Amino acid sequence: MGWQRAIRGGGLAGAAVLAALAGAAPARSQPAPLVAQGCLGCHGPGGAGSGSVPGLAGRDRAELAAAMAAFRANERPATIMNRIARGYTEAETAAALDHFARRP
Amino acid sequence: MTALRRRALLSAAAALSVPALARAQGAARLLVIGGGFGGASAAGFARRNHPWLDVALVEPQPRFVTCPYANLVLAGERRMEEITHGYDGLRARGVRVIQDRAEEIDPVARRVRLRGGETLSYDRLILSPGIAIRFGALEGYDEAASRVMPHAWIAGDGAQTRLLRRQLEAMPDGGVVGLAIPANPFRCPPGPYERISLIAHYLKRHKPRSKILALDAKDAFSKQALFQDGWNALYPGMIEWVPLADDGRVVRVDAREGVLETEFGTRHRVDVGNVIPPQSAARIAVASGLTDATGWVPVDTRTFEARAAPGVHVVGDANIPGPMPKSGFVASSTAKQAVASAAALLRGEAVPEAPYFNTCYSHVGADYGISVVNVFRPNAEGTAIAEVPNSGGVSPRGDLPEQRRLEARYADDWYASITADLFG
Ligand SMILES: Cc1cc2nc3c(=O)[nH]c(=O)nc-3n(C[C@H](O)[C@H](O)[C@H](O)COP(=O)(O)OP(=O)(O)OC[C@H]3O[C@@H](n4cnc5c(N)ncnc54)[C@H](O)[C@@H]3O)c2cc1C
Image 1 (cartoon, each protein chain N blue to C red):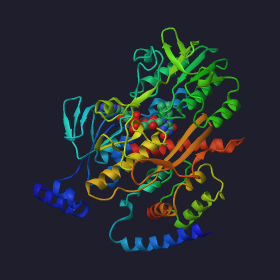
Image 2: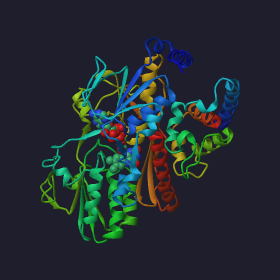
Image 3: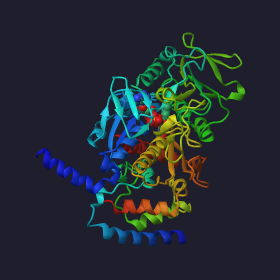
């Protein structure tokens, strides 16, 4: 899947940038980018999860990217994430995943 | 710590985080009016993401009662305390919470006059005051009538929701609950139908011979097929929905006699009446000259500045949102965009580009949830908003008990999550 590969590539680049920044600012002080704000409506404060809605913060980026790709392609059982995932561009999804994956 | 040393530390901190413009002028003042879904989101988001802003919030109520989940209170599935939230979380984030009512905005002088007499100056204003009931739009439905036949559509201190709940509890088995439902646009398009469902949930268990008569000024409504499937499955024979085409539009209310009267003169006598009347933007928006002939506030669709008053960002139910519903989720999503835009404009930066997002869950029964999802984008000129093609939509139809059960649970998790984001 081209889309999924593109996201994974972005993740490596994102990780490199993150490593470079790591000394400058503690990860927990990074605010969520605007595009990730929508996730906080259900996925808990800072993406920590809420009840049976799973957390996003600190999750493996490749795993999240694969899940989003599968939701988008309707290849994964879903209640609403399939409907949501299709609304975002690859770049927007990548920005949100970068953010959550680097949170503690 | 001495004053001098504190000042030195503060300016060192400022040098790290505050851009040139704000540093030269002192902290920029972001004033928020209204501590509901839009306003509380704006204030919290501003402090989390733009700590260089001096944020104050004006809200007359000491605690906020949500409209979301009020229908579950009517059903007896939640208590009022569970849908009531305080402002200590925002205070702890450094928001100055001012318990007062804004009377008028002067967008030229950038000042707001409060009922208590104080006048506040601001650099940018976020206004999210919600709706007003257009008393008088339905003949006979004024404020006094609303104390007999509640609207329960503005939560306020919770009195309207409590009143409707008490009336449902007092109604004898075999009674008729009547609802008057308005034409578009109004707050929470699926809200009346969730209310019908959850009143039915209560009646089925406690007063099973009762009926619900829903008189509607429309011929179609949000998630209609899903609601009607659920009504047939859970409450067969209990709910009669009368569309506009079948004389469903209520034009006159006689609260004392308990009568809802429709366009062509049918007088429906009901035991409990819930009148959801036509609405407009809240009074402060009208009084400040921000609304147009529709009663709502036209805005730039990227910055949410009022067309009539640049520098005043109007979010939530009060604005004209294009195809977006007047929902708490949209109020929160667009409030964050408005704050990010205000911050960018204060710093002379480009306004951010981001999609707006909505998820509205409705309970058809206590363990039966359905939803609508929308992703929206504004155009580059800030003149329109469009839904992203091939995305979003409503829950699938069909006999899907596991999906319905899960969505009811996710609705609870949504409520916990978004109220933590707002007030935590
Ligand atoms: C029964 C019902 C169920 C709903 N369910 C859902 C749901 O499940 N999901 C969802 O997303 N949405 C839901 N909604 C819609 C949601 O409640 C609104 O869309 C949301 O509250 C809009 O936010 P707001 O900030 O515009 O207004 P509000 O949340 O109403 O906040 C406005 C605030 O401004 C204050 N205010 C007003 N005037 C002034 C003034 N002059 N000075 C200072 N403060 C002032 C008010 O006191 C109030 O606290 C529901 C609505 C109803 C009625």
